[in-house]
Image (cartoon, rainbow, N blue to C red; front, side, top):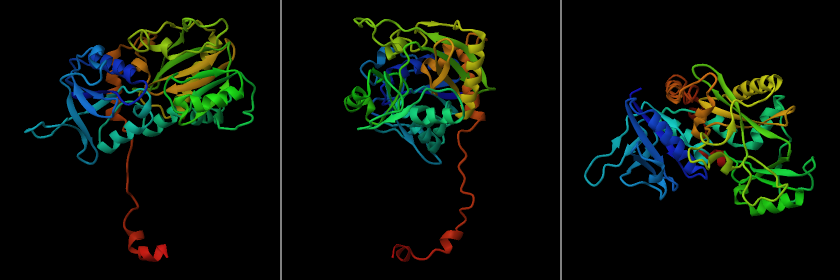
Length: 374
C-alpha cells in the first residue's frame, strides 16, 4: 500500500492517549509511501495534520496548520479535504487506515460503522467486535457462557437490594475502554450512592467482587498473518500519593499512562514471573477470547490472578500504543506489526453488505400503505 492514514484522537476521555498512539504509529510508518495523519478533534471535527508533529502540538486542541476534513459516506465516500475559498474539495485516495482511537466512539463500533459506510478499509475490530469489547456486561456474559473463568458481574440498578455476592465491590462503567471511572466501595449502599454521583456511570455501571489479593496479567493477541500471542506482562501498580494505609489498589489510569508514551512507558514485569501451569491456562484462555470475539487486528486480553486462580477480566480491542511493547518473545518490530495490520485491512474485509433477496417481490405484492395502517 502506498497511501495510508493513521486515525487518532476523538471525543473520548482517552483522547490524549490516542494522540500518543497515533503519533507513534505515524512516525513508525514514515517512508512507507504517503502517510496521512488524521486527527479527530474533541468536538468531533476532522483534520489532517503533519505526521511529524510532537504531542505538545495538540495540548490546546487542533494544532496550527491543520487542514479541515469531512468524512463522506456512500459509494464515493471517504475523507475529503476542504478546498478553501477558491479550491475544490480533494478526496484522500487512501488504501487503508490504521485506527488508533481508544475508548468512546473510536473503539465502541461507531467509527468502524462510519468507515464501513464510507468505504474506507481500516485496521482493528469490526463493528461487532468493537461493541462487544466495549460493553463490560455483554463481554463478561459471553465469556461466562463459553465456560471461561470470570468473576460475577452484575448490572447495578437504582434501588437494587442484593447483587448475589458480598462486598467489598468494584464498580466499573459499563461502557468504557480504560480504568477511568472505576471505584472500589465497601458496601452496596455506597455503590448505589456512587451510581448517581460518578459521571462515568451515566450509561450504566457493572459491579463485581473486589479481590484485594488479585494482580493484573495481560497478553497481546494479533490475528494476521495468523493468530499469535505475545509475552505475558504483569503491570506494576504505583502507590498513590497521600493514599491511606490499606487503601484498595487497582491498576489505574495514571499507572498506565503518566509516563508520557502511552502504555509503552508504564512500569511492568515483562515477561511476567508466573508458574508454567498459570501461563498455559492464560494462553489457552486468550486464544478462546480471541475466537469468541472474532478478534481482528491487535488486541490485549486482561486477566486477574492471585497466583493460583485466574479469571478473564476484559479485552481491549485497540490497546494503548497498539500493545507494541508486549511483542518481545518472539520479538516483533513495531513497523512489522503495523505492516501486518495494513495487510489484514486489505485481505480481511470487515463487512460484506448484500441485498440478495430484495428483488421487489414483496413490494409488488404489497397493498397500499394506507390500507396497512387502517
